[in-house]
Length: 270
Ligand SMILES: C[S@@+](CC[C@H](N)C(=O)[O-])C[C@H]1O[C@@H](n2cnc3c(N)ncnc32)[C@H](O)[C@@H]1O
Image (cartoon, rainbow, N blue to C red; front, side, top):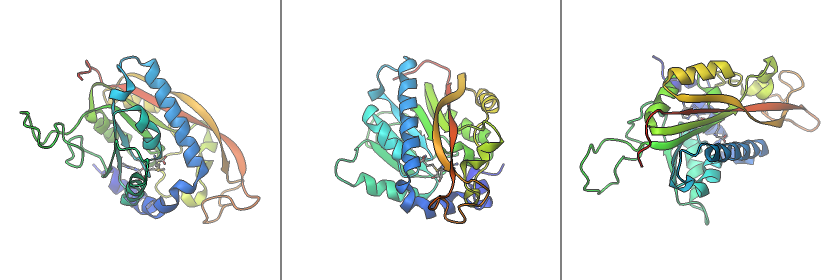
């Protein structure tokens, strides 16, 4: 089976594209606004699912964290965020941000394409130096997995969802956010020059619901969580190779975003 990273590479996007964009990623207002909406939706969802005792006890895994914008927003509310991204350039920028004064101390950046819940790049299940018995190679399991604006880059979602399932504690949840494939116009989310590495034009609610159930998630809910405006091309290629609108270019389009929720069955053991 082709891996997600090999698919990303063969699509001409993926690591190369995101490594190249990493240094300027945080200069985009839309990226910050979308991450704030995602954080609000995740925190609201956590409150409605009272399975978790308190959010500040949660170990969170963010897959495709980019420069860590969402991780920074979640970190004050949870115990720890392990922030992984396949693009080393993105993780380099995150590392620089974490070395600045007043940066949160509970974010662990990891450069890895996560395809295996027991990947040695993940933190160990038991702290280093611990004399507790048990499998020293076992990896940490998480209460919550988030992934924002990532799924539309992954050609085959089934293996990624199975990996997420394997990274969760019993009773843990995924809260995955991305734009919705609401109509053929969803294609306009990306300018034509940014189509490399785009596997689908958003998330289709029914298809995603089935994929999550097939991966073993219970209580699956895929629904529109928020809507926001984005400046899109008036005609294909209007922005040229710049990737964004120049003076007087583009028009505003309302984009719906989905929250994909599911739980790994079982009793949560703390
Ligand atoms: C559109 S960016 C979003 C970054 C960040 N979540 C944000 O909203 O600012 C997608 C990110 O997902 C990462 N990515 C794509 N596929 C991935 C995969 N299979 N595993 C890990 N990261 C992946 C890319 O490297 C890229 O940094």
